Image (cartoon, helix red, strand yellow):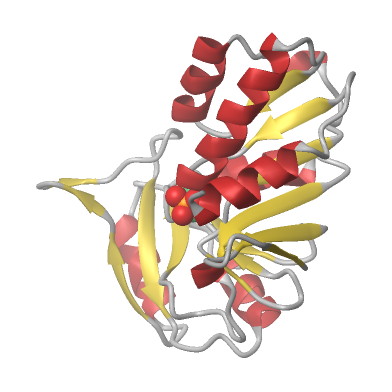
Length: 220
Ligand code: 5RP
């Protein structure tokens, strides 16, 4: 079985009847949503919220009951992927552009399980460019402010257009190199007015399930 699928399906074992579940975004979360759909057809009773339009559509097609945010205070569990994770469960997310919704949903959950293949597990974050969601207004100034933090950064593109998130914002992909102090980088980015959110998830994930090429999983 594909390493992403292995991790994702193992995480779905933690979903129990009556839970309110956050659905992540990306190719690994896709497998988790598919498995949840199977389990719902078998009688699992859950309600869910999604972290992207794509995941919401997938869940709807599979018959997973989706609820408006107004009808739920907190979630029991969110299952989501990551672009990188370290041994302290610090993450880089946002490769799929959904980091803002993913962070809102993860922080509104009692538990977040990260699902990933083994290539995502790193000693030090930063090889993957850090996605930062910024508002379109005066984005040129925000990008300059970000560059002053000591990274190389460029706005994500989709063909000839600037990529827009589900929230109508831009993504700056920032190459900091090895991020030795993720909390300091997170604080510096958060202090910039044009930054909506960044893809560093620190102190949010409770567990990671990593699918390995030998067909086993690691739990972090
Ligand atoms: C989307 C994300 C994804 O979880 C992350 O990019 C991992 O994606 P994949 O599972 O496709 O490798 O943060 O914003």
